[in-house]
Image 1 (tube, rainbow, N blue to C red):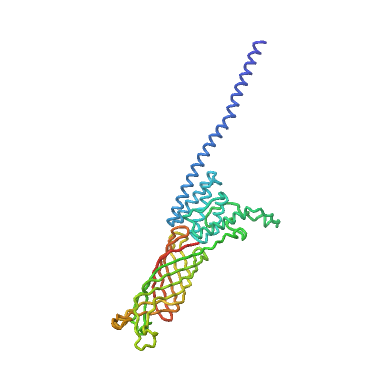
Image 2 (cartoon, one colour):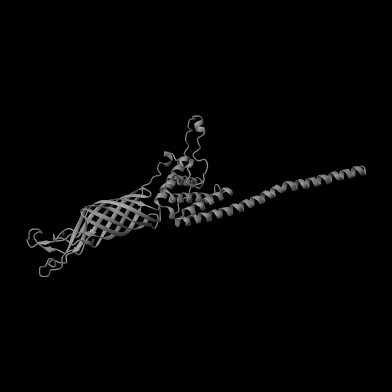
Length: 394
């Protein structure tokens, strides 16, 4: 072999060695870059998920403080962060949708359909997601149950609908798009009847209160049959107020409330004629009074501290205890007479407004404090009751 051929073969082998090294290097470079990119993406996703978790926390804190606009802004930022970082199916996105539904219900009852749509999105991402107890008031529970029913209905296989031409072609799918989660309507909020069936749950209210009051008295006494001095007198001692009702809307309660009054301090009086008060010739005073009211109560907050106004129409009596300063000959023992204290009854029709607040201590338990102003007809009184109690929501 000539020197020329030897050198040519050497250069050829060197060329292929260099080519092979360069080819391997070029092939390995994308793999290294992809690995670095995957690690970076993973790190970015973890950081974004942590940020979304923090925004969810801030939103619930704002919700607790009734700062609904701040809560909505934080949750919209959380959802946008999910979109930018590929967290479309991450549980933190589901939690953001869930929280947004809760906030929308609290901010405005007119956003209920959009709130249900956000609950559905949360369930579609995380089927086992549940409501935190701190936000699970009756209104939220009802809307969430409706979303669960709709999600279950959407999973049931259905026969394809017959084609009806271009009109159907233009109709959006029931779950297309995610929307921006605010008060704007979108395809997700148009739940059909079969999707919402079974989403309604009874929301019963059972309350028990204790109170007392004061009211205007006039006319004649029930025992003495004497003219009573006009003025404000107490309805001594206390009254009990059991109540049962139903939330026809999350903010509207219709109920029946009793008023069972206990009276002390009134004195018996002997009947000199012996004809009006039985064989013992003693006219005994009343020791109580009862009334029953139909009430409508409107709440101004969906949960937590819930101020309200109410209206009541009832039948029954309210009694007031009135001292008779000019009479000192009452009591059962003629040898030891006492100052006379009589009662005045008002009613039998009672009506008037009320107001107060209910403070929810948990998912089903609440404290109540309120006042009501009542007018009695035809035996007139203007009466004010104040009382507090407990309530259970089922």
